[in-house]
Length: 459
Image (tube, rainbow, N blue to C red):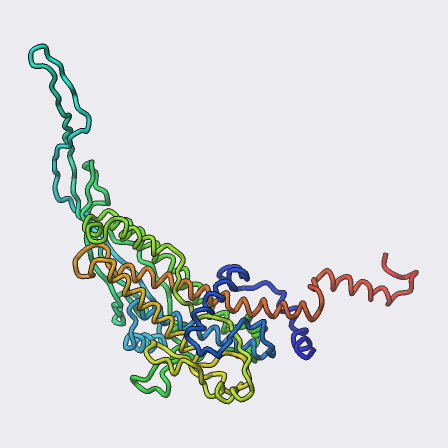
């Protein structure tokens, strides 16, 4: 009853249309992904732990705010792990965080290619058909048909680089995160160039990451200390309506939406500029076999099986475990080995069913472990990066990393939307039905009639 009384005043707010969204909330698909992630999470946490969907655990309205902070912190930390896969190490992150305090920081993927004619060759191809001739003097004779084929060979050189810069491109504050150049020899049956002749600059794709970097802090300003995230919602802010509808979460979703769009553009860039050309590269096919090579390319398009540590979970805990929760405990320690960790921002709420801070760091460690296992698989199945071929583990790693970044950002959006959907469901359960503007109009019309005598009532 107290939960219902706490939620009723917010009914009108929940029914407002959202101003920021990436994709429409898909409850069935979201629950399926969380259930799959729970299987992995059970292996990471202690066997006695039983985290589950937030809707299935009794909680207060304040717990919803704590859950929104938990999900957002997990989402931001997962994004930082993806940035690490893109070449942002500890020192680079410290530099970018420093830049973001005064200037806009942008990620930029750019590249260029050159198509060069190599040679023309002529070869003879024997036909499988045979021509039989009969002679009264020499008898029967067989002849083979030989066709002369001209072939043109071209060299395609592709170079790309991923950089982070502050302010405007070309300024003094610029970091090269990664890049590579490779070549492929293509063969055509006509003299027409298979790609535009000469050097061609690709259209760069950029995304600002200033807001994300501004959420990363160095505790106490100590150089060399671990970077931490401590995202919080200002409950007293004028625009704060619900755990989902507030300026802080809206800013997080806006930044995530930009990263999602950039990730898709990067995947398109790699598909068009690298993978489609590498598919015809005889050097790569000789290394892996055509079937193995096509499987490498297909793996960048298939749904990812990597663990996404953005889960809106609660866990009912006995009273004796609450003190441990307040101290930031859990099964994951302090997040050693990860690029960022999460601080115990909710330590004052010891009785909350939100997972512990150590659990966040355990999930981040599992995400990193899954990524490293994926990189090891790519290294075994692809030519080394220094052999000059067009395709290497570097390009595949970049493509998979940005696709995983897209998944993490989408899961963040779906996670906070789940909290809003849970709030709406509880409101409907408390009220008994969905109250619409038409219901309020009928209510006012009914009671308005009581202000007039029958002969004076509006017709």
